[in-house]
Amino acid sequence: VQLQASGGGLVQAGGPLRLSCAASGSSLDYALIAWFRQAPGKEREGVSCIDRSGGGTYYTSSVRGRFTASIDNARNTVFLQMNNLKPEDTAVYFCATRAVRVPVSECLNSIHYTNWGQGTQVTVSS
Image 1: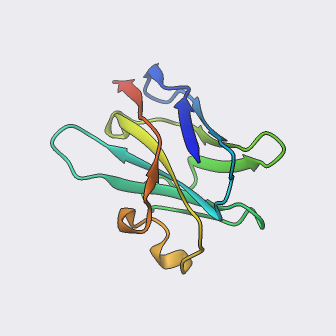
Image 2: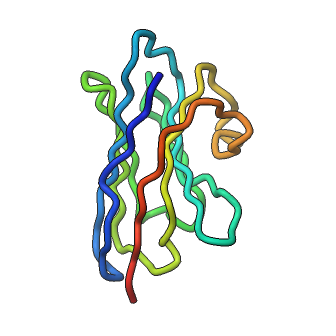
């Protein structure tokens, strides 16, 4: 599975941004898609994950209520709608897939993901 993330950019604090992650390839065998982010000098952080079949979602606490993940299975694309963005949301955002589900409490742990897309930069100005 190849992953192509897009939609990043520069936005003022309080503004919205929508990221997309398009999956392609001869074998679209994945059960989970997650978004991660990495700010300069910081470790990669899990942001959200979504179940491909049921659409169930899970978010890290710092974005809960502001970010919404959704999936368009017809287009093999996952979206991350980010509202009320804050300067601390500034990071490179990555999407990643996993073929087999893990407990929801583990779905934001990057060690479970072996297939990663390139990142897209999100910069939130204050």
